[in-house]
Length: 493
Ligand code: BES
Ligand code: ZN
Ligand code: ZN
Image 1 (tube, rainbow, N blue to C red):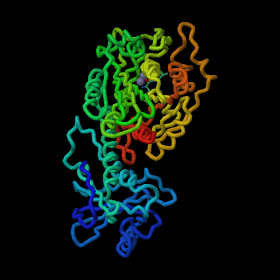
Image 2 (image 1 turned 30 degrees about the vertical axis):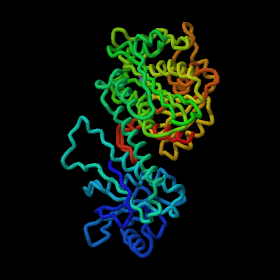
Image 3 (image 1 turned 45 degrees about the vertical axis):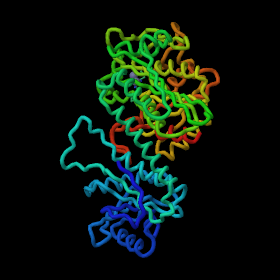
């Protein structure tokens, strides 16, 4: 999507979007009699600025049209509403069939918070909602085409500053990274085996201050990464570990390790899933996809921290070499685990990476994984679970996530439940009791691999990584969660 910023007097387009608060007398950026007139007309058709509602007006005698989009009550305002309202307006514009849309940016006095954030959210709502995964389908002739050009129209030209341009570009870059992460997870499973993912990851080193190292089978063996190797052993596609590194231009304030589960397809292995459970398992690499997306973003921005990305890739298949229930897996830190179900595979990749990541002495280690079906049962499909030892970061993720329209909720990591993992043949079993606290016991398992004193947060994205229905500005399919929040977290460090 092309993005432009212009002064209102220079705007000559056909469709203009304006925001309106429920309860205001005029839309934002259209003050005075003109605004009052518009508000009066829309009130007649029962539009008063309600959140997620739009109204289409032929404002002038010419062909130009105005779409008003509701932000709801001022008292309920939060930035994420701008993304939703922007997306609703784009949808309306798509239906009209235009390629280019102007959006009236309010004046700073009219909205709470930074105006640059408001403008950024307009751009995000537009780009993220226009996303399509059309690689394998032919769009129908009568299908609405996504908007190709977004013009931010400023009534107050004082706001048309270099800082505004930078904020808007930043929002576009971040949205692009999210679309990239969505593409990876939406891609069907067969064309994206581990080696293909490694190739895509290697391509990320071309931009910015990023290096990429791919650790393949022979080296994984030397390192003793039994988790990645055993999970990958049931497929003819060998597993690998991608290690990406971002070094800041200035002084590095901290080191952060971000790990993402990269199961390019989860059949369950020998503990094979029923077909219904496999339908969306191409998305079982969404954690790793978010890590690659994060580095795509890091290729174009400055953050004051060193970031290591660890993306272990494997295909969980029931081939002849596959791990078996009853097997014992030895991980990078030497700890062994008894396999109960080969479908609980993700934790073994993460275990190797958490132990390996700990040797990098991070100030913060985050892992992101479509880890447990139990998480979807507990929190539904819009909330990710947070578990870990770094309470400060957990609290921050909840707050930042809400601003970003990504939702998180903490689950406990009670030491009392560690007994669920007791094994007679290995240091521990890899799962707890059937049907009991599945997300928590998975978290407790992972904790065993986090180095002493390393602040750690585990994010279970089993619910929100993929949606079968359209959300406000997230079309059905892979969502890119929690990339927006992690990017905001790093930016704020
Ligand atoms: N990838 C799945 C978890 C999952 C399920 C993600 C549904 C998204 C939607 C994971 O590898 C898995 O199969 N976990 C098992 C663990 C069980 C065997 C302890 C599960 O949740 O059933
Ligand atoms: Zn599984
Ligand atoms: Zn899985």
